[in-house]
Image (cartoon, rainbow, N blue to C red):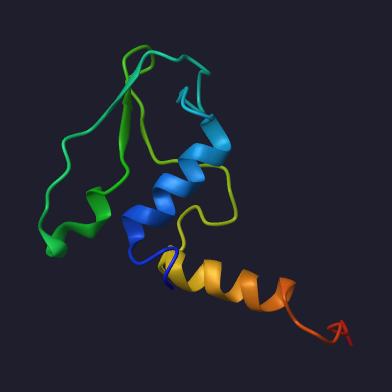
Length: 95
């Protein structure tokens, strides 16, 4: 929770891993994209991390095509769950 204190920190981390500083549209692979205007309102969390493609006019997030895409659970909780599984001292059994 210290490393990823909010949703934007999680999104920035995913963008760094997926795009390595060169974002591109997941629909048409065009690098001609720009970040949408983001509201600082906490009530408009859905707008955080949204991008626009100038080629195909698509709107997308870094989570497009990932397991996180369309999930209602915040990325902080996803990251915490993944961390708990990866750092478990005993192996987890599938049965």
